[in-house]
Image (cartoon, rainbow, N blue to C red):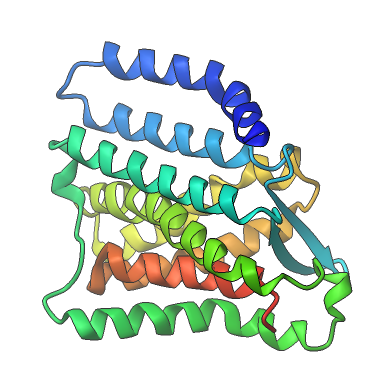
Length: 246
């Protein structure tokens, strides 16, 4: 609980300013609100790093790895908060919801594609992880943390997918071709990790390469199969990479 309070205190100044801007904007101003939501997401995500809620590192100076805090209750709480904030954003912004494409009519196929996308994102890393001792890529993860970690990665990345693949990619599809929107979605997603790569951590270019690769796959999944499928791709991939299962 102390960690969570410290976290809210850390992000509160930024949240206050973002909320003030949101309410000052006219209700019809769609794109500026989208920008505010993305800035808000970057704030609440990147503030987790200095508090130790998650760690990102490089094994052998090139292989990205992830680990989350060893506190299941905190992971579940953060996941639920992320879900509630996402639902609040969607409910409160009906004009933005025109850009949301949730899932294709072939729902089972979309779920399968989402899972396959996660395998595609994680496969190159899992292959290389086998050549690197787990102690050099974040150490083993307790089995009791797997369910809390799953909840966080699915719900937390649901927020990210609604913003980047829902609102942003959906908006780009109204001003350019669908495949250019895919490229823009992937690039903007990677750009959203610049501060995490360069100032919040010192991982640098490898984070940008990883997020571009991941973002383009999620954008392709979203194009035909919707946000739910893209959330499975993103959330499951991060869960696989952060769980230490392989």
